[in-house]
Image 1 (cartoon, rainbow, N blue to C red):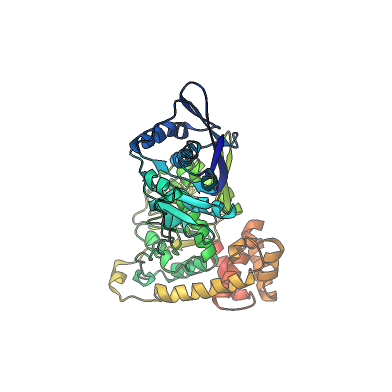
Image 2 (image 1 turned 90 degrees about the horizontal axis):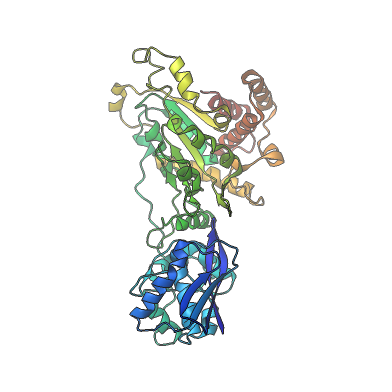
Length: 500
């Protein structure tokens, strides 16, 4: 007799259904797991055997074979422990095979039979709901998985509780969703003294999800400005929150099963490897660009990143997803993020200050900024020179709008875009518009068209630059609640494009 239960194998953010089959047959006592299992899955037999022993359940003196189907799909991770144990217990007639067969299970077993939390329960819950099966997972993961409304989720603390649940001795309660994570303390934009033009650029970038490059001397406030972006960004929509949380679930970043409505703000160090930024490593895990999906990726000291790492950003910026290629699989992760980069104008940082610049200026600036290739630089919608602030200005009272006031304008502009793109799949903000759609929504009036033509000829704008100017101009018009893109909107968009 072959008993069956189900679990999942992860390919990017997708959880592929895996059938766990168990057969107990005559032969020399053995316990084998087949079906392209990695080392962690193969070791499950020892953890399962020890967990059963802790419950005073003896392994049969027969041949136990567990098959993970489809057999040609790679299986990785320790979450296969629980479904293997379920299928084996059903084969030993300890659990009813009919109930086990209608379950998607995942969880790691300790040697004493307790269940250890695993990653990826949120995408696994979606797969269980699609298959109209219940989901069984460790108790600590139940709150996370329960965010999928259509799924019936049961969380157990140990294998003993699982046995008591299926035998009717002590049914497990249905898990409830965790609390929505409260926003962290946000820094106010009004704390930044001066830099009014930079604040305006931040507002435009936040409203249309445009990529922004800040160039300035050390201490001019580039990092300080970027750190205030979370305070002006609108909260995640329910759809965006689910997408983002699925990626964070695979990375093990969800705290206490709570889903956050706050947009991600990722700040990798400039020594980060390509796998850390783009994704990869063991199990092809998501990188920083995917963890920043629907949020912000802030890369300080931008030219200091390895050249190969910077060049890998070019394709994800354009396509909104990244493919991590491996010999036996291609894993795709979404990565629609807003890139905010900060850089000094040269190695010493003071090229624009004659009193402090080194003797190699301006050649040192050309060498330093030359680490950013032309095609990558062309992908920044807004480029801004951030001048230093005089120390005498630091004692002046705060000026300008608060983050709350700016956030209200950004939210209003996002609402306009949400309504505009309601019928277009995959398009949420102006930065996503392209082709005929961009032409329909961002064609400027006659004066604006003449100005844009002159600017394109004078600055020799590429086709990509031309379209990015149109997107930024559309966002500026949205901030003013203007139905049309006019010449002042185009002029401001061009000024940010040729700033550096």
